[in-house]
Image (cartoon, rainbow, N blue to C red):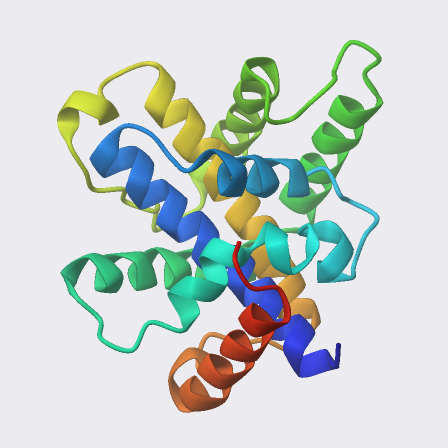
Length: 206
């Protein structure tokens, strides 16, 4: 996999988190496998290769599908808005070394906790959500999640949304490390779609 394909894989990780946020906010649930891959990727602190950090092509297959959509509808435009917001949030985090260090320290402590078993467990999701609340939620402008208030006002859904947003920032960090920038979503659109489709074909049927 070349560097551009790795960049697309990382962007697919961001797009996948955007789709999961929308599913949670509007349906009250998210696809189980993509959700699990997303939240587990957050603790892959020492993995700068997106294939390893994000679970490979299969780990971001939902995100790759998002990148290859050719006819955007209002829901797709909303998801794109989340993707752009996550990339912007990651960019602002890079300028705040104290907060970045705080997040890294919190994730390292969580990963080394002998009682912690899985970031996709209820305990793990709550821990990731709390890290988001204590750090990234203080960066302005805040990511505004729109959806059905029946779900957004529950205790569980906002916790899951925040955990996924943290995962989205992690994927956006990888995207940036591989030379990815927000403007490329527009000026390199055709190349991104082509690469995403090629990656999908490399692992069909997910």
